[in-house]
Image (tube, rainbow, N blue to C red; front, side, top):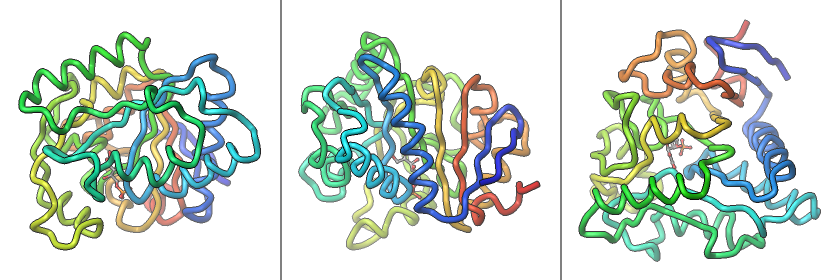
Length: 251
Ligand code: F6R
C-alpha cells in the first residue's frame, strides 16, 4: 500500500477494488469500535458493494455489533418508493442491513415519498443534528467528481435538498435500471455543508473511469465545478483508491 498526503487529504493507494473495500471497512470498523453509539453516513452504488461485503464479514466474525450504530444515507432518488428494486433503501437492505444486527429504527433516508421535499430535507438535517452529527461519512465519487448527488456547480454551503441529476450521472447509473429512460431525473441529497460537518470523511474509488475526477479533486483549488475538491478543506479526510483510479496522482 502506498500512502501520501495531497492538498490536506490522506491518500491510500491499494492494488485492487476488493482491497479498497477492505481498507474502507477497516476504517469504518475502527469508528464503530471506538464510539459508544456511532453515527455513520452511508453511500450506495458500485463502490459501496465491496465495502459492505467486508463489513458484513467483520460483523459475522463478531469484531463489533451494529446494535448501537445509527445510519443516515447520503441520498435517494426522488420520487421513489422504498420497495422499488432500484431505490437506495432497497440497495442498503440487500447489501448491508438485512445481513447484520442494526435496529430498523436506527436507519435513516431522506423521505423520497414526500410531496414537500423542502420540508422533508429540513427534517433530515434536523435529525442528523439532533443525533449529534455524523462520526464518519462514507463517500463514493462520480466521474464528474460529484459527492452524494452534489453535481458540478453545487456551492460549499449547500444542505440537504432536491436536485436534478446530470445527464452523465443518469447514464452512469443506467446500469442499475432496465433502460436509461427509467433513471429518475431527481434525487434528494445531503449537501456539501452537510457532508463537511461529519467528523471524519472516507472517500473510496476504483477503476479507470474515476481517474479524471480523482485528479481534478486532488490537484485543483476547491471550487463548485469539482464538488469533491471541497474535501480539501475537511480536517480529517481520507481517500482509499485502487491503482487505476489513482493513476494520475501517484508519486
Ligand atoms: C451514492 C452516491 C454517489 C456515488 C457515485 C459513485 O449514494 O452518493 O455519489 O457514490 O455516483 O457511484 P459508483 O460507486 O456506482 O461508481
